[in-house]
Amino acid sequence: MRVRGIALLGLFAAVEADLGADAVARVRAALPPDLRARLAAPIVASEMYSVEVVAAVHEAIRTELGGGDPAMNRRIGALAARADFGGLYRAFIRVADYATLLRATERAWHRYNSNGRVEWAHIGVGEATAMIQHVRGFTEPMWHAIAGRLEAVLVLGGATSAAVEIVEWSDRSVRFQLRWAP
Image (cartoon, rainbow, N blue to C red; front, side, top):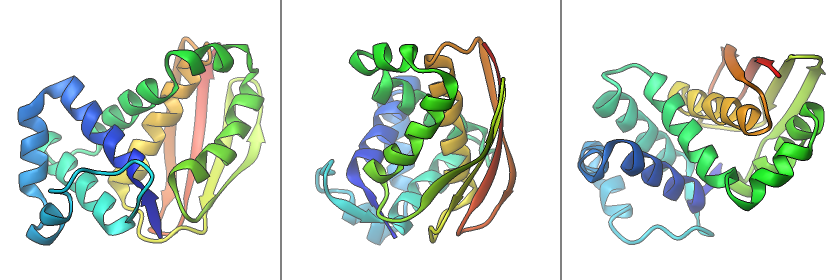
């Protein structure tokens, strides 16, 4: 399982925008030496990185910046989504209904990941259930970052509030329950 460098760039940019360059340095310093060396070279947006690299960055965010709480990963994921889907994309997100917006995540998944599939078991008024399956090596902090991304996308799409609960997760799949208020 591999993750595109654009995801790493977005993570580091969101950490820096929210908490400053010192926070980025703390995250990098907390990485195992081999991964720190791997990320010493400039990160290339189109290059694919092993899921272990991304998992280690998320773990460093959780431990170094979040005091062990994955809520920081959720926050950074939301900030990264706002950066990714703000600006020009925001106009397109605003005109889509919630079902169309959520189903678009099926295609967006492959912008970042080499494997996996997003499936919507239910999309209703103000609520939805999603599964992401067929991945390998995903961690709890990574799933929290994705939950934060989904919350941000819903708000960018016009929701006044959004909450994404991780109902169950493993390194190979997750089930999310989404709720939002238009």
